[in-house]
Length: 134
Image (cartoon, rainbow, N blue to C red; front, top):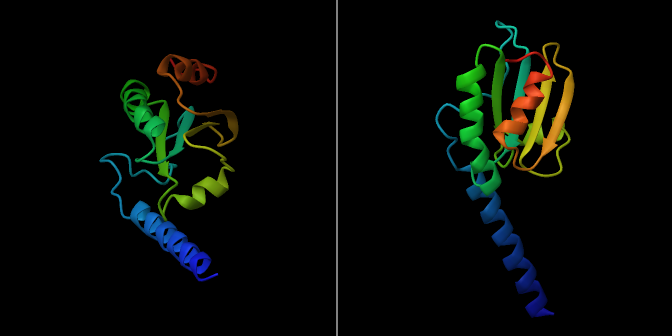
């Protein structure tokens, strides 16, 4: 019984350490975009829900940057690190079950497409083109 208590305590402490360490990681430069601005009317808002420590999520970051560079006047790119305290509410807001998850909103803020997992840029661009992004 004493061994069981020690095992449970160690497991809880390990979990807490993991959670605390997850929240202390900095966000990558240029990716701290937690709110979509209303000043510019974008055709599409591309929301990436992931983490800077998730390997498929890390693979999405160059794609997000490329999309922002190529289509920045028509597409707003937003990243939420859902493994941080600041980003966690977005996981609930968008009802994600796995990361990375990409959510695409039209110019009225209505979701029109969703993808879970790594999303190759060529396929992602096809989703943008559905709303007239060229």
